[in-house]
Image 1 (tube, rainbow, N blue to C red):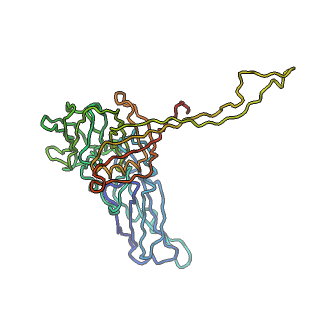
Image 2: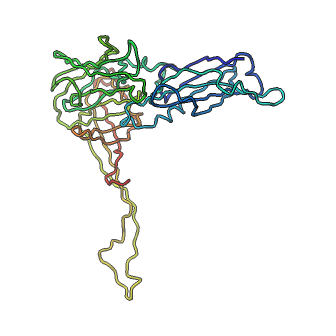
Image 3: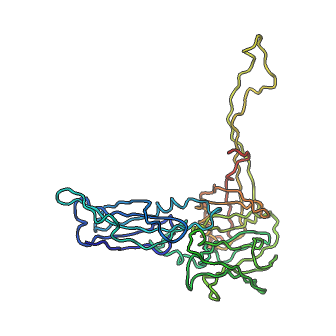
Length: 391
């Protein structure tokens, strides 16, 4: 009597999409009465060693071919509930052990063992999601051209000399693919680097390195009209495709810099260079207070009392932004903005002050160079903080 694995997850998965284990009892017991596969799931943050206990106990009946398929993504995703803005390294370790139970011919429930018959290795899960048509259990590094830089690009972007921003870099690996530095190359100029180190602790496996010219630690001096690339390196070996940045001149309008959590649980940035608009509205509830001194010896009234009194007044603010003219390859990254659950307006770059946003735009007609030639988008956000500080 034995259990075997038919399917295992990759070394690293994205927790919002399926994380599948498939197990099979290969001696025929799965045809027995009330046969059930069970899974003991253990997940944790911190050091790589497991706790030895389990957090969730899951049960599945065999499917039509006798196999038990367990998708652990919803359980693991529920544990990745920190704000990415506050926690740069949202990495979760997990492992799973499997067993079975069934009823014998006299109705007694039989268990394969009190402990798992088979146990997986230790895997990692990130706060993110896969895209169609990517296959189930595809390893995360193979999803991005720029890995270990945790972004989908696009390959060419723009910044201002005053911009801040960091890019998530996955450093929690060892061997030839472990990045040791992120290298910056000024086109027609010098180079610089930012050192990164690996760790087995989940709390340090993603390092945020400078992306924009005014971010602390940015190793180059650039100004209007310059350009530079960013690329991860392991020693002298380049990893992934470099990202290219044009340093833009001053614009007629005040640019709005937006950052949002991408599908790898890290942040992408975009400057909206055209006109932007703030709309400030109020929501209120009113009541009519009693007029007159009805509890006094004589009837009178206070001429300062309003007969329509506001007792709940709150605000809603909306930010409408317009992009510059864009190449078509920005379409995919805009889709990630539209579905992001964590978006910020970098309101004051000198102090790194941000305002949380919720996207209002729920439909965008994506344009192509073939059809429209020039591509520009308008996006609307609601500001996630009211005018009054009420907690």
